Each structure stands twice: as C-alpha cells, then as structure tokens.
Picture 1 (cartoon, helix red, strand yellow):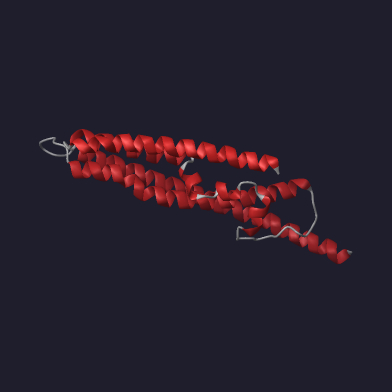
Picture 2 (cartoon, rainbow, N blue to C red; picture 1 turned 135 degrees about the vertical axis):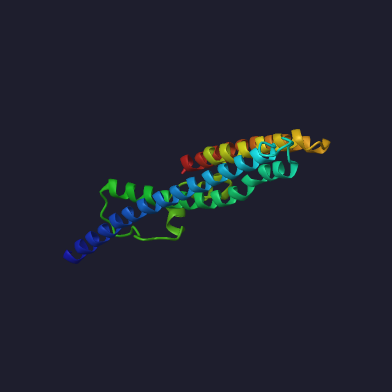
Length: 198
C-alpha cells in the first residue's frame, strides 16, 4: 500500500509540474499569436498607406500595392490558425489537469506529460471542433483583425483600381466573413448539444 501511495504522490508531483510547464508554453504561444497579428496589421497599414499614394509625389494610388494590402492578411491567417490550434490544445490539457487536481482524486490513471491528443479526445468534450483550423479562423479576435484587413483592403482596391469586376472583391469578402461566422455558430451549437447529451 505504501508503494501505491508513493507512486500516486510522484504522479501528482509530475502532473503539477506539467501544469507549470503548460502555463509557460501557453504564455509563449499567446505572445507569438500577438506578434503575428501585430506584424500583419503593421504590414497591412504600410501597404495601404503607400498604395493610396500618401508617399508619392503625385498622390496617385498604386493599385498593385492596394491589391497586396488586400492579400497580406491571407498569409498571416494560416500562421495564426495553426498557432491558435496549438494554444487550444495546450489550454484543453491545462483545463483537464486543473479539473483533476480540483477533484482531489488520487487515481493513477491520469497520464502526465501526454503531448498527444489521444487522451484529450476522450476526456475533453468537443476537442476536435475546438482544435480545428476552421474554429480557430472563426475565433472573434483573428476574424475581426484579418476580416477587417481583407474587407477594407478590398474596398480600397475596388475604389482605386478602375476595373469594374473588382467591385466584387469587398462583396465576396463580406459574404465570406458572414459565412464563417454563421457556420461557426452552427458548429459550436451542434458541438455543445452533443456534449450536453453525453
């Protein structure tokens, strides 16, 4: 019995240590996310300002730079979604450990230092949805940052490009943003409905 108590105590120490490691990893991922978002905003504002002709002698807009301003967010969306996915994986694990520690359980079935998602899939409701790339795109902060950049960059490009088909760019962007929001809300409500049924 003493060996079991010693084993449970050691495992509990490992789980507490993992919680500290997770907290530092989460802080690093959040820092990376905001660096990505700030870089996107900085490059977008710069391309938009130059594209609108603010730094040219004749003050004429430069349509290729306006197109680039509209396209810059696309490059950063992917990096943001992948980092946000990693953040959600770590946060799910952290939440699972906190619940375990709060329960006061001493069972040794809890796996410390599990970097794979196998145990999380079984224990965290809606794990697949919460860590999907689409869910991370639909997160309100990145959606407002990148959606706004796409929309306003598209509007500037449409206004100054002097091509009739370009008017569709802000319309398509708006429809895409609204579609992402609607699908995300639908999927979230479905996922929570399934978790409550369990």
